[in-house]
Structures are given as C-alpha cells and as structure tokens.
Image 1 (tube, helix red, strand yellow):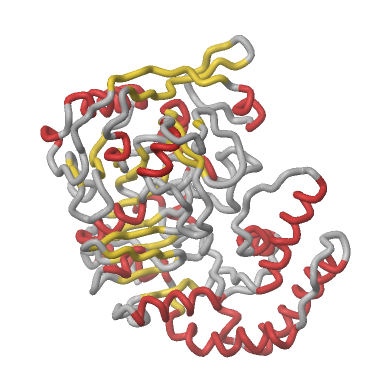
Image 2 (tube, rainbow, N blue to C red):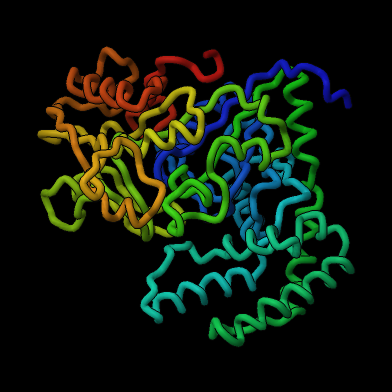
Length: 445
C-alpha cells in the first residue's frame, strides 16, 4: 500500500457541541447520502442515535448510523469499546428489520472489549457513591468507564484476542481476578465466575471474527479510490474526558481530533468539522448546567422544551434536563473542535414561545466572562447572562428553505452565529431526513 498517495475523497467529522443528544444521528444519516463509509471512533453502547425515516423510528447505540443506507460501509474504529453481546443483539435486531448488516460492518481488531465484570464494577461504583453521599457520576451502568480503564492500564482484552482462545482465556483469568478482588471487597458487589464469561465470549467470537478488519487501512483505501468518509461522534464535547465538565463526563474523547486517533487515520484526512447544536440545551445525568430550567412545572418554558422536544435519553430513557441555549459553552466547543460549520437542530421546539433567551456569558465571583469555565465548581458558581429575543408563532416544522423561516427565528439564529464566530451551514426543522435547510454542504464547502 502506498501511503504517500494523495487522498482524493473528502471526509467530514460530525461531533456534538453540547452534552450529547444534539440530534447527530439524523444529520449523519442525511450526510451519508454523499459518503461511501461511516465510522464510529469513540464511546460504546452508552451512546444513542435515533433516526426517523419515512416516519419510522430506529434507535442505534453502537453500530454507525450509516447502516440505514444500503451500500454504505460501516466501521467501528479502535477508539470504541465493544460489548460483544450487545453488538450481536443490535445486529440481530437490525437484520430482523430487513437490513443487510454483516456484509457491511467492519470492526477494528484493536477495539477493547466490554465484558460482564466491567458492567458489574460500573454499577457497584455508582451504588457505592450514592450510599456514601458522594453523589452519582451519572454513568449508564454499561461498563464503559471500567473498560477504558483497562485499555489505558494496558491490560484490556481486545477484539483481536477473540481469534486466539488460549490467549483470551489467560488474559481473562488475570483480568477477572483483578476485578473480582475489587467487587468482593471495597465495592461490595458480586464476584463473577470465569467459565460463563469465557464460554459466552467464544460463542460470540464465531460470529464476530468475520467482521474484524484493519479499519485505518480500509478508510485510506476508500479515500484513495475517490470515496468520501463520514466520521460519526458520540456523546458531546462537554462530556469529553479532557475538555468536558469533569468529573461529570464520559470516559472517552468526544472531540473532532479523536476521529483520527480513534479510527487509524491522520488528522490531515479530517477535511470539514460539522458541529451539531440544539437550538436550546439539554443534559442527561449529573453535572453543572448553568442555563437549566425546571421541567416539572406545567406551562413553564422548561416543561415546554421537555415535552415538545420529547427529551428522553435514547439509551437510558432518563428525562433530559432542559434549558436555554448556552452560547458561551458553545463558544468553547467551537474552539476545541475547530468547527467548520454548525447544524442547528430542533428549532421547531421553540415554536410558540413568547420570548427566547440565549446565554452569552456568566458572572463569576465579581467578574464577567464570555466562555464556559474549565473548572466544574466554577461552572456551578457561575450565574448566566442572557440576551432575550422575541419568539414566533409561525411553525418552523419541516421548513426546507431559509427564507421560509419566521423572521424572528432567522434573527435568533443570526445572533447565535455572530456570537460564536462560526457559520450555521444547516438547520434541522424536524426528525425526518427531509426536514433540513441546507445553506452550505459539508461535502462541497
């Protein structure tokens, strides 16, 4: 393979710019019409993308959203942690719906595996934090964090180990002993047995091994052959392990730069970065949220956002916390990701509100700042500063042309664009593929 060949395909990275749940799945699905392949590069099945195609909902957690488009190759990169049991359940569910999955899905041999003891450790830790009064981090309890810990500690079982039963068994015994020691002691959990875990893994291995691949090499070959690739991020920038509201974050890097490291290509192959942003803000789980509004009071703005936006987590079903758009937090996401352009989603949820607010900064210990602080305690102490805009009574649902939007909606979006210093290239006005306003195409910009 000649790695010096100039790649002729164009690649786009899609990342969330808030605390996840921004509507990335719909946008990825829409853009896949212009891509030969879609790549997941971080996270695990703690992420959830809901797609609505011709009125039918499909929820994906681990498999790239491109699977909904026939003929598109789907890659799970080395930056993703994979639960073999969940992977096969998701594949079988999609196949039962008539989709061709196994011939188009490729999994990096370097993916760390999530095994049953990771799940047990994850849940035991959250229970211990709650009982001790420390407060939950808000994990999904799916073993994501413990699996990433094993990866960083250089003791993880990886997908490639499924091809070598004796090697898998040896590594599993050592790893299980380590986690059982914590479970039977400090964590007050339930130790697990070796044989059921090994037997299940070996049974699943026979189905997974044909899908294992050198993902980085395949992406390179796609580009050299003129094909374009879409890199699909999970979660959101403010949940990034390094740049988010630590410790209330996920266990992986959710930012655009990790599309390279998490899939095995160079950063020069990331040509356009599309940031997905709700027209307001939501968050699932614990952690600071400066522009949060109460959602339980009927008739309140928070209740409107929660009910009209149908704000429940795709993976957990937990009610999402809701609030005004925090453009000062968005400004930090623009900086971290090197955003080329934004897609604003769920604009239609704001329809009918008498006035709309946008967070443009914070008062923090006597100072005024216009970008989200780095320290979570500072974020908790920060008092949001708002700009207020008149709302609109006209519907924006399903609108496909910028000029068809209500004047006040356009003014609101124009102010967002001016404040953050990045262009709005797309607006999503509903859940279906066709509910999209295109101002500048990421694959043609």
